[in-house]
Structure formats: structure tokens, C-alpha cells
Length: 345
Image 1 (cartoon, rainbow, N blue to C red):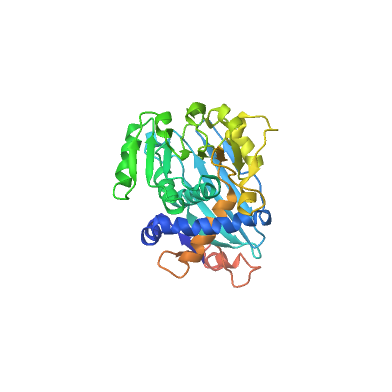
Image 2 (cartoon, rainbow, N blue to C red):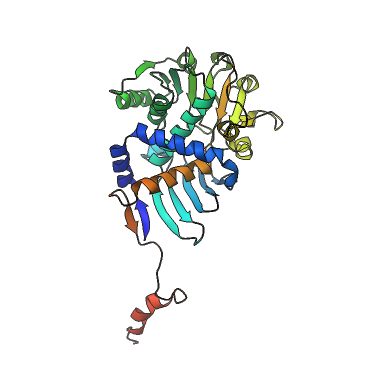
């Protein structure tokens, strides 16, 4: 039997554990994984692009366990009542090749993305950062806010989205969390006075959702909307002013903000900061940019954490996914008995 954490179980697990406690745990696990980054297989995701969007597989292994995520990105889906992104993940045993768990990964991806953003901000933002600007208040926005509150201590959020209904949704969902919310009139207005700026928009275009003039010295940027070639959110000039950190450079060169600069433009690996090999922020005036496109190691961490936490609880069902003949070399035995009782006509 394979552990099975479907959408209802994932919702119940998060509801009982709490978003912020889960994110705190995930950040700790993420730091451990980033500190042993070279233990993992590291390949850019496998993407199948169409005029409608993209379908991707994100695999990795540390030699003991293997994981992959199936995920899509279809910006026109909400017009049809569907989510832009849908995903699930598989966590497996390398020694046998058998899957150990299948899990929902829409909610789980939002949690791991928020945890990764907050981890990056822990190392790259100014220690006194308390004001977050959110450019884009879609599905990730509430998770990003709670992660920054739990890990960084953010208590004030400035929001902007071209879709007023998305800002309405954010304000409804965040009511009662004790976060001061300012509804901005533009992206630049949202960025004014912010210590950390997170951009997370859905349109798959080379857009500039935040002007370079809005990025002040000392700001930390989490650009997390990049996920495919031809999609950007920042003014290219900002990249020339910032110190840039990435997950896996070969993938980020294809999908991230650094699509806009030459291949020789310097970037640094975030895992090296977490591992203590290079410094993060070096002074209060420095502009730091985490050009995040999401990477399979982050999904691996999230799946491993869920499996450890739900095993033996009501949040883990069982899925009879793999056949189990009494003789492992006799697969046909599973269907032979019905065949023998079949009456020939």
C-alpha cells in the first residue's frame, strides 16, 4: 500500500497543524536540504509548452529517496472556473523503486514556496525588515504573508493587483490575522516604504510589473512569478543594480528574471549562503534579489516532511497502487484465475 494524502486530507492536516507552524518547520527542513544541496540530483524541470500554458515534471533524488511533482501553469484557467496551477507529487524509495506516498501539491506547493521565500529573506533582507509589498495577490499571496510574518516578523503589508477582486479576496482572507494592510494604487505605490518586495503575477509575458525607480537601496526582492521562458516581472535595470541569488542557475537562466541579462551576468547560489560558504546581505544599502523559479529539491523537502508528519495519522490514507502477486515473477497470476473460469462459447 502507498500512503495517500488527497486534497481533503491535506486541507485537514494544514487546518490542524496551522500554516505558520508548518512553514516554520519547512524552513528548518529547507535549510538542512540547501546545506547539502550537492547531495541531490539537480536538473532543470522537464517542460511541455503549448499555446494554452505549460505542463512540467520536477524530479530529484538524494540517493535514498526520489520525488517528483507534476504541475501545470495555465493563466486562462480561472476564466473557465479552473485554477491556474494544479499539481500532485510522488515520494519514492530509491532502493526498491516503490512509491511511498502520493500527495496533493497545490496547497503543499504554496506552503513550500512561501517557506523558500521566507528562508531567502532571512538571509538576504535587512534584519529590521517589517514591511512587505505584494505585487500580485493571487493564490500565493496569503501564504507569502504568513511566512514572512512567522520567519521575518513582518507586521505590515502593502498590496497591489491589476485585478481588484484579487485584492478584495486577499483582504477577506487576511482579516483577523493582525496584519496591517495598505491597499495601494499601483505597484510602485505598494513598493514605497517596503523593506521586502514580492512579485508574483500570472501572465506569461515579458512584463515589467515594477519599475526600477520603485526599488530603493536596502530593499530585498523576492521575484517568484518566473516559471517559464518569456515571462518576467522586473525592470531589467533593477537586475544591474541588485545582487542576484538563484536556486539552480541553468533553470533560472531559462525561466527567471535573468533571462533579461547576458549569460555572463553574475549570479550567486542561495544554497551557498545557507551553507555558510558565502555571505548573504553585506550592508543595509545593498539591493538583494532572490530570482526564484521553484526547484525540485524544495518539493522533495515538502513531500518528505508531509510523509514524516502524517504517517500513522488520520491524514494518511492508503492507495492500492502497486500490484502484489504472491510470486513477484508471476504477474499473470493476478488475472489467471478469472481467465480459467471463463466459459468458451
